[in-house]
Length: 442
Image (cartoon, rainbow, N blue to C red; front, side, top):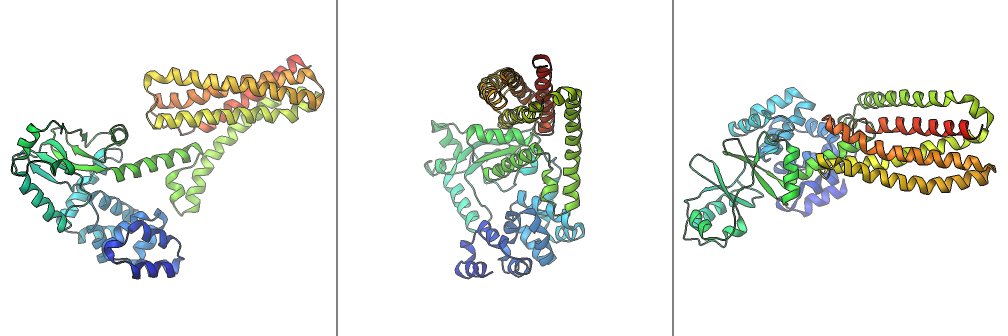
């Protein structure tokens, strides 16, 4: 609490950063948090609440009145207003309704407009705060208007000027640095015609998949992108900070899916909810483990006749599982980054199979020698070596095939991939090792 108070006392509001305040708040206990959140400047409360992990949002809502919450929302940009209200609805629908009705008509209209879009549409992530000008405006007048808006805090984080026609149809995007070197006495249109630069607007449509928009930012290194409807009418913009958040959320979701857990449930404080989600995947894993055990049961007599097989058997399955997980992780990540196209699947499979075969040969020799020296049975080394090659080869093939097949079926490649792959590598590993042992050794 002392560090938080010192920060508040030693910085004026304009110097405070929501992320720094959130960092200090996370280190407080529940009692101190309740006191501290009330000391956060009213204009920054909304940004601080969104910067905190989701589990803290309940505490923010409990410690602030409807008027304080509505003021916090009014200070946010439109896309953040929607996010704040959605989180508030999850915590307390009645309070969310009161806060919404306390907002001014413009804020309510913008939030309602954004709510119309699906979660995966670009329009759901845009903000309405844009700086526009008509192409026939004099540059000097545009700059004066921008200075006035900026001084009155009506615009924030503006890097570009969007030029529109009388119907608000987007024409050009002009960086503020380019605007400053224009001839101030001429119109924007005249400057554009005389310039060698291209101010053509790269746009995203409001109903476009947000994943495609993320890729535009990656490919073209954008800091901001205009959002238009299918008639070309400018609706708003998406900024790079929103894209970073989307990338982080997607990366987190993938990591959770690969581990067989639900990202929404894990961020919830409800232990039963998170437990049920985990139990679902653990149940599936139990079924696959039983399937692998049934394969072992087929070779019960073989195992009983040579104890060394029981000792070495887990090594084959473990190596196959790890090799497959490596391949799976690489392919899932490349798919997420858009590095594997539809016509590029065969190249990816071929590469992963080649790597797995190379490692299979290497560790076949290593493990074969270890088994020979350990149990003084030369053919046992041959059996585990061949099994290692087979299992790692299959691990590489299916580690690449499973996510590619799921992608083709329009299913998130991360969901269920690990469970399917583990089943394959366990079954193939046990079957190949014990089957070869039965044929070669007995």
